[in-house]
Image 1: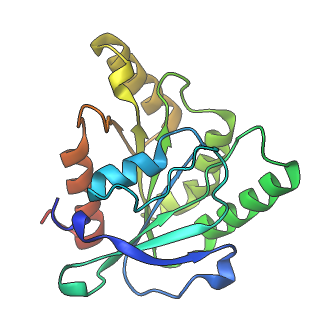
Image 2 (image 1 turned 30 degrees about the vertical axis):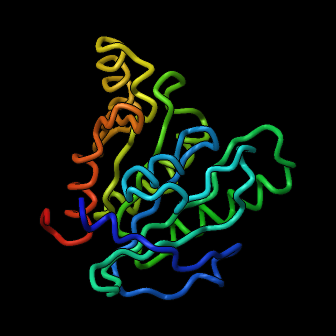
Length: 203
């Protein structure tokens, strides 16, 4: 857990050419605009405003990078990708973001793992399915992949079990976990998994 708490802002990039070339593992967080992505990142890193949670979903239009590592030495990076699918965003902006995200997920050499966040009350949507198809070839080549069902505190136990089963079928491989920032559910599990992705073994 302590490793994630070292997170600090590295840079922001509106398009791929602004992203720095990195030789450390990079873990991307993706999901719909209302999936709780910023809250998840802030909870895992124990920092209230590391990832900016806008009151207007879909407002963040850049890829934000956060470096991780003790004693100020970067040994991994978290990438917060723009949320997608928010209806109030102009169509041309949606298309631009989708193109940037797809290119990032297909071409980013340092990308080691992808965390797809999903509200379990709605399940994986058509846009989530498109993203899964984009990364599937890289998953087959060894890209790590996790579906995180956020806001799980809004489900009772049987609903949570059902949501897990459905998401596992929809994801077609990869891990699926329940997560709640409010009830601190899944935080340690996810932290250990991300550390394994970055370092090869839990810290």
